[in-house]
Amino acid sequence: MTQISRYILKAHIGPFLFAFLIITFILVMDIIFEIVNLIIGKNLGIFIVLEIFALNLAWIVAVSIPMAVLVATLMAYGRLSADNEITGLKAGGISFYRMITPAMAAGILLGAGHLYFMDKILPEANHRARSLMNDVHRARPTLGFREGIFMDDIPGYSILIDRINPRGNDISSVTIYETMTAGTPRILTARSGELDVSPDGSIITIMLYDGELHQRDEDTPGRYFKEVFDRLRVTLRSTPGGVSRTEAGARSDRELNIAMMYRKVAQWQRDIDAAEKKLARLQKMTTDEEPARHEADIRREQQLLSARFQQKNSYLVEIQKKYAIPASCLIFVLIGAPLGMRMRKSGLGLSIGVSLGFFLLYWACLIGGEALADRNLIEPALAMWAANIIIGIPGIILVLGTARERIW
Image (cartoon, rainbow, N blue to C red; front, top):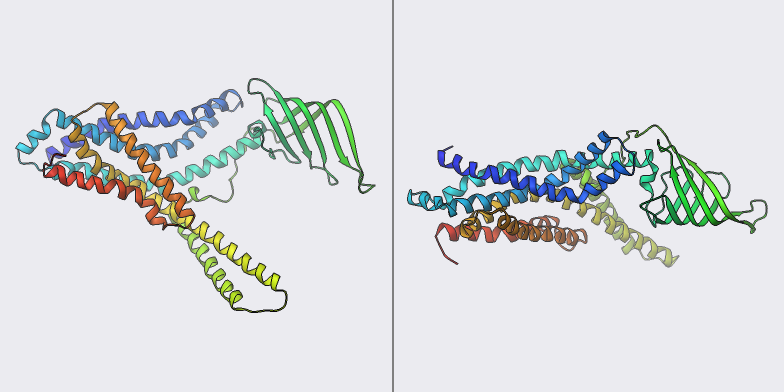
């Protein structure tokens, strides 16, 4: 490596690290309130909270790295241009292609490392985060209480609460389905109540006010009991003893590495081939007996085929995403280097502003392409690489124009 290459790379290191920390901090603010809620409201140990934070930090790092590359490239070449060092290099016979070669090489190496992170580390972190949150919900049932959503974490009960007072233990519009008995389940409804959880999370006490109890009479079919009460205490027991570590079960597409997803794709393709053959046989068959059943069989196979295509595309999209996002490290060098030289500014605010605009465009293309690919409207590879193409082509044009010293 020549002295010039080392100097150009050294100009990138400081802005990259600074931008990476700033961007990571901004994205962390999206989850910091949930972390604070776990510490204050849910009585979890500090080590459990730190592990949850670290596992959720993985996807933030995956987003921060490409954006930091763009910010660092804009700042580094902007500073070199503002200090007339670019002019000095050109006077010494150094071409623009030679000036951006070190940054491009660094972008390729960083993209390779980012690909390893996306393929090996991020899926495991996502899986462990989901497993840990499931364990926390089981050990601390209060984490499962959400307004307007049934909570089934406590065995034998299904609980729906319409409103929860975040500053106290008051609740309103409560419905409890008691399913732990072998016979007909009881249904409890109340206009209001109070929720109390023991320190270890093993006992949940719900005091119900102004409610009704409904239960069918098993001895007399078609008859049920209705009991009106002013006040009723319901005690629920869950598993004590803190967070017990378990596996979350089947992995989603974002919890699988590339090899695992290719195996899934092969499995869906076998199902698609079998369904297409069966559908072709059904469509060729003509039957005068039970035509409604025959049509139902055809519709069932068509629905199965559509579902398998959607599942296959979702995995192919995730595979291509793992390649496309690391490749953006090189794409952002191509767009950032000529723009930085033309802006002739080294300020962090301008660099982050320009980077944010490109990154919003990038993620809009990525999300839109994913939605279109999931609906089988475009190919998964094109959907995920469209963002790199849309930004990469102007980047190449800017590189060629800057090398030829064209003024636009």
